[in-house]
Length: 257
Image 1 (cartoon, rainbow, N blue to C red):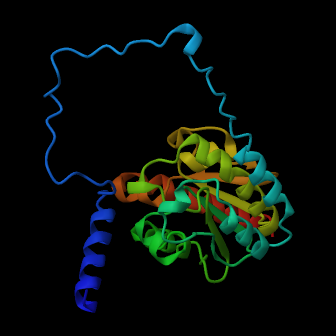
Image 2: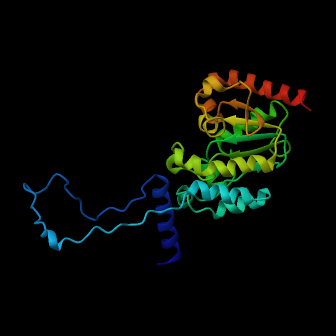
Image 3: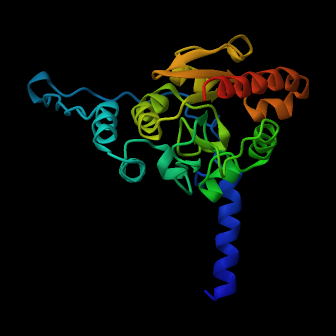
């Protein structure tokens, strides 16, 4: 196949995968309603000839325990990133383009914890770089913060879920040890927890409309739940509450210098 044909076919395949067409189909259609009127009976073998059932050993590897072991062994953020990249028990990794670890300044006073990467984040390998990330940057700038100088950003999940679906509980459970160690190593003064899934992972609670704006504690740090910027894009009327939360964050940082 010539180079142009090859790259054209590869681009078409990538486009179909992006649309969610990730299963093969047959060349000819199959009528699933066209079934036999009667189902043939299978004669049972005599009792003496029956073969005892083979016991298949169950996988004894607990992915959460493995995550706890490798995350706790990391002594710095680079080591944690390497441990996360080598972790093979999360199926999300197999369908993602890139590991989305963090962005911003490690050691900054404010650490923002989002939910999961989207399409733009998966492509660039950084959290909050799409439309929601652009809004987040504007929100931070309104209180004199920015990711290049005074904020550190990560997500609960480091790999994009297919079609941006919600994270599954087992996926969050596997990633929690890495997130907890991430917070320990980054050691921020304040955690900003954006979105329902982040609140569930760090606070054990859901209901962001009720939780937002109320200071609490997560992993031994003051924590402020806030609306996710993606939610604000869908519900512009909620920006008033988000602005109040930003002012609360600004006042906390000013009062705890």
